[in-house]
Picture 1 (cartoon, rainbow, N blue to C red):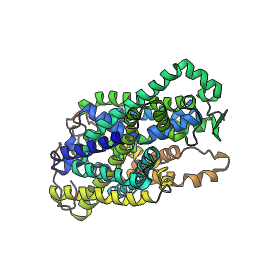
Picture 2 (spheres, rainbow, N blue to C red):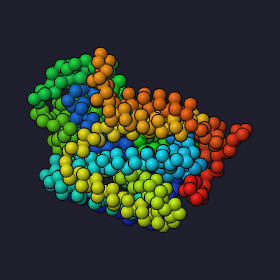
Picture 3 (cartoon, rainbow, N blue to C red):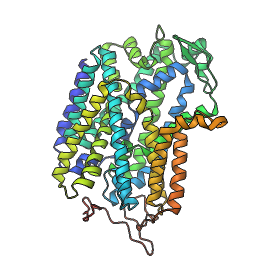
Picture 4 (cartoon, helix red, strand yellow):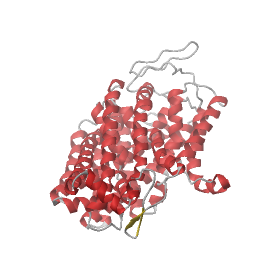
Length: 518
């Protein structure tokens, strides 16, 4: 409790310190695009992983063996491709049009005078992320109750108040600093706890022998063991559909606003190669460590767990002193918090920039925007808090959120960066098709008869969204007048092609016309 208390106080102090540096709306939303490579790498990783890293993944490996780690392989590949393909161009493009949110970038990129792209993407972002924040707060409450027996409501309330305080005070700057601390704690736990457990077991050979004695399926990458009634038995082989579904989680990265915001905020494209190496290395280490926590927990604990997702909590308390366990388990809270605060700020920013400023007060001053942004953080947090108090029903909706964002935004973002002549109609068609496919796939799949697959919604969602964006983007609507075909992967402005307008140079506060467009 002392360890957790010190950590929460430290997070509040981060908000107090960074409040002095948060004087403009640009500071509050993207940190004035001044993230260094190490901070950007840690912030993107910490914002990404959430409590799933230390609860869901170790629990899945504990129950099914290394066959469950294919999802980690997909996430590693997705992380690398996101840094390689999306980060450089998105950093340049968003600065060119002065965008601090994905909806504002998409509207300007496709020159959408109807404002439909902005309204649609902003609405999806706010609604889904509010539910996402609620699910994170639920995890905070359950964690406090599981570790301390403090009660779900008390834990939920304490953690929610702390997150809101430092997010309101320091905005993006507070999140970046806190994510650096939290990312360090996460990698420390991912390395230390498996190392302690392996040392006590006698090394990898002893672990392999003990797992074989339970059931060889635990070490078979082509199968998943079965865990029922606190016993492991040989399960079913992983078929092609299951393998594709696990790997497909990596496709979701291209459309996650809370991760893409880190790319928009990095100091320069010249910092991206280092950030990519650091970020991918961090992801590999934490995913490998979390998987090892699940495997070692099978043989290190005296009795099988009734809830596999508590393996890290039980293992930390069983093998270490309360002080060490406190430090290790703070990383679980850090993983949850770093995602919750990112999604909270993205939702508040979209409310302020894409709804309030774009549709209600086009001439709002920077001071007004900063105030509305902070009030939006409070409003989203309160709604999420009320949803969280209702319990676990929200988790059923959140199960679609990763696939929903990945399918609705991912193909459109990639095409916007690599297909200069894509139209606004293509962007609208891609977003709507991707979102609807994910939401309706469980109803569509059984209607396919012999083609019914049970595949993860992300796969058909991305395929359908890409097809719709390509068809409509090619044949429907007016092509953009700005030419992005020669955009350089540096901070220099691209050259204009004959007969087209050049992309405007970067400006910290581009003016808006009477229609509210930059």
